Length: 378
Image 1 (tube, helix red, strand yellow):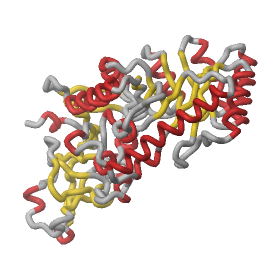
Image 2: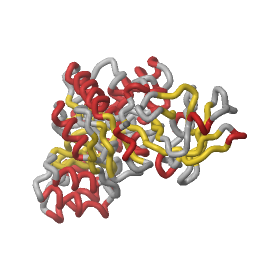
Image 3: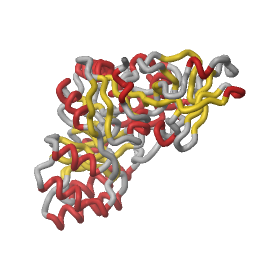
Image 4: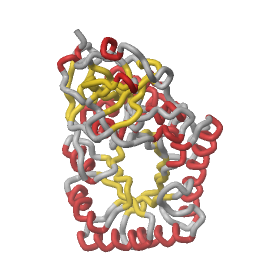
């Protein structure tokens, strides 16, 4: 009997042994480069998962919501970077965390944002610790490292009594890379652009003790980390099909899967119908632009072994359609995949898929089955 036979579906399944292997790999890699790892916990949003990253050597964390900061601070994590530009309306929550003893760092990439942070900090008589976000690849937000705005923002924060703690960046374009050479280029550019911004602040007489960079692909691809204080990476804890498509992991490294039940067939179309639609798998189709489009996910047997050719080819809210893209019109579907049988699906994007669930069903390394809670919301 498979341990997962008794688990209601759809369910988020974590293979603890794989997860621990992934955690050890990243920690060992960055330890070898002499740089601090600050894992991004938005991937798991689970204290049980992050405790294992902490046990491996990660002393600080990154969050993407203030709720994450509040939940992890309540669980004993005190060194937290909130890596989304601070909206003025959220300053009260940030200040409340600081007043409780959290070593919270926040970020901004605008003069208006910096001025709001200074005003809130002065009103509360509580200095806030701030990093300036740098645009290192034109993918998202941030200030260009050579822009005079960088110094204006730095002076506004420092002169207003805030702690100008440094610079940070995220090379989101790394998710679009398809070769080791492209990954190396983006990773080194991420590092060099952030280090340049830090040097410009220092040359202007402003403090900049921290240079924070990172994503899972760039963390594993950079030629070195000279000038960098810390690296942020998140999805490495589970990995996913996008990361496998980029080339920084294999499908054997993916620690998160979705357990699903076969609920029907369409024999004339070669379809197997399961109870994991886009509400269970997420609507992320991140592999669509890669060399191999994995649909909504690669299908595995109940033990987690990929079944060659089988993918969730399309999805409705609660229905997934599985077919074999190599031999789409198979015979004996009902016999091979009877109604009630269990399958597992490797996700395109672990963060988005995990976000559909309130708990993880964990295949523990001791051979047992555990439940780890996770939280959601903002």
